[in-house]
Length: 116
Image (cartoon, rainbow, N blue to C red; front, top):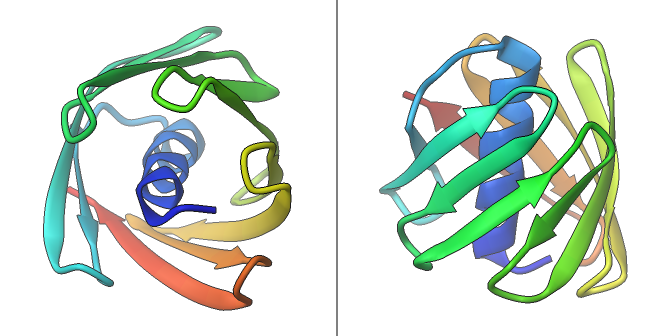
């Protein structure tokens, strides 16, 4: 999964699990804060300011208008699993407090983000 998409997944799934309204996520890999804006309820409608694109979806998948690809996911309490159709790879992660950790099977690395 590309790193920008990984950040997007961390933001959306972190917000869904924590049920909060933050607009910023801190990326420990790049040292940057990234900004998103939108609604996460039964439907997902998020604006990604970094890529100037929209993300839509529901409780099982996210559609990324920047790549015209889907991200399928499943949430189980404070953890999640999913599949990125663009790179054809699986990922998993956990949410604890405001920290989201993602393991990307494409490179078998862990990535850490904080909702702020």
